[in-house]
Length: 281
Ligand SMILES: [Zn+2]
Image (cartoon, rainbow, N blue to C red; front, top):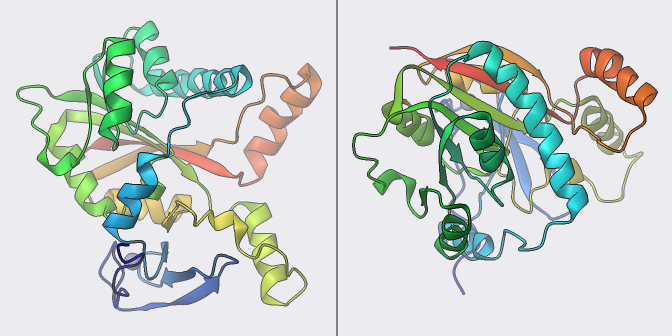
């Protein structure tokens, strides 16, 4: 059996500040730290590479229900409506962490030339055949894209899984065209529900499934719009849009949908958010 955890971080894995401190411990007995320098929260110690490789080999469930696919499709529609406002010309897109491929297929239907990447090679090989798409796998650092450069890298609920987000953003800069765009969607650790639960847990009023909102089974970094914005700005990107990205519910009735989109989504930090950032040259 491989070691489950790495050695503990002594400094922030994002901004290298030594001002990190223990913030919470969840019901899985994982410790969460927070950095005073950049505000990011992270698991410390973090899962080892060997543990994560084994975990992700079984990560993508082969059978998605129609309901899940419908929900993913709604997310796509929402996200690409905003994206296309910033990027009117559809060019080469990389779906980084493409999962079951719903987002990549949708983007292709909209006119993007889509390539994909995901970590597990057995899964991506099947998908590449099924979707007739250039889908890469394995160590992202070692991939050779040749002359191909992207106009958009789409990373939907992936960055919170990455052990070295700084290195990945560096890769992204290399393979993006000048002025190319990056979409990142992640859970929001400052969602009002999570903040409330955190407070109740700290004063001892909530005792069951403590810190469940960290999802530390597989999420290892915990962002909010400010900390992700800082990371992007320190990595050569300019944030051009940030907004709530709570899960759209295609089966919701029209009135509830209207209230959600026009009141709740605008006023309350939801469970997830997304940013669009542009590569600065
Ligand atoms: Zn930091």
